[in-house]
Length: 586
Ligand code: AMP
Image (cartoon, rainbow, N blue to C red):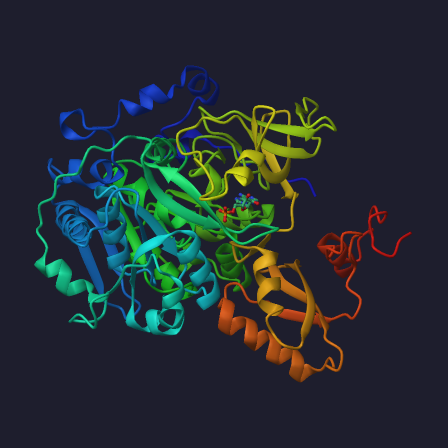
């Protein structure tokens, strides 16, 4: 079905969008100009995210402005002005330095969306250490892999998370020097310390050391298709992209109240749930609770949210309830709605217009890009179902790989190919930690290959087609099939496992495993439940398979590798494609 573009009319705008003339802005854009919006560290000592996001506001007229409002699950809330954030993050930076955690050292956090992790992020940037957020719904295995691969030296977490997920594996993490617990009043051991106590004992003044724009700031793990998760390295200079997308895409204006529903365990929750709104000196809403339709509508109304950044799964959940929030709640402050993370169906864009009073703007990016790269802009027409057009300063193309190991740009319109970006934007990842080769492989013929398939239309809008690999997107979260397969194979009954994403109308894809059992083990409902429970315990609910199907002959290629592509095609009743590499095809 063809969806007509949603035309933006000037009378819609209560606030004039920051980006109105796309062609002109693209033509005159320069990253140096964006850099001129930054204050820089005093004395020309460089560029530090925390200085730009907090200190420069705190020490100016905005010191007492509301920077972060935290909404607790239990109905309580806490407000932090820019000045409060400055003091708290100074304390955290000081305690890191006192513990001997320095420049380039990894500071991991594992907790729900509680204020401590926001303060830890900012304090970590100040200390020029590396912030590494972990999703609180991960089970012990993904947590362990990320702490190990990320060389974590310090972990901030809760006592429950620590006992359930880290303590039994701690001896296997020799680099993990100290764990700070947010919810104990006193130190429990020399290397298991109370964060509140250390914060109280730390000074509220801290001088940010010289920070090069190329100093590492964030380590974000993202799932691979063939191996364990990869740590994408991001630097302080990324803030230029956070700043410019805050202006052009999210359309921040002074006085805005912004709510990003993403968890900092994923890149959206860090780049936009922490950094971008603070760079712009606006108010950032953080809700500790997970999705709940009534609560979310109340948040939009009661917090007077003006810019909302959410995800397709949440939007589809609201749609499914058949509600029209704009009728029952006062959403008059809401000016723009954005979505990211998975394809946003055109129906959802249009539903937004009816039920929320505003259409939804889809945008595209990924962990490796560090910030939004392609977007539907508030000041421009929306094409429902499209991801939009490249950010000024970003060159995107549809390319095809050639047999000689090069890529060529597909100039024809509406042809499917690999979505590629010209390297060099400030928030581009600078490497995969300890995996130089994997990083190098992402760049071919002068392009960064995103791993997504897409097409481009005559107006320069990009349309998502699918992943070029086997990575699964479930509820907007990336899951690497290899990680799930490896865990299933640790079960004594499992011989082999192949994991795919099965399309699901609500959560995008659900994790489905095909399992063959060892001789003497029989498939049964009990066995299925046991394996699901086994995987949940180790991987956590965000990653574990929701469906398991037994198959004694999993399709394999001649090298003995399970062909997930074929499992998926069979599951969906699609053509099986080229079978010449199938093990028993000859
Ligand atoms: P992550 O690195 O976890 O943020 O996931 C990035 C991936 O999510 C992209 O490479 C896409 O496959 C998918 N993705 C992100 N945004 C969109 C979007 N607007 N439409 C379709 N897929 C998206």
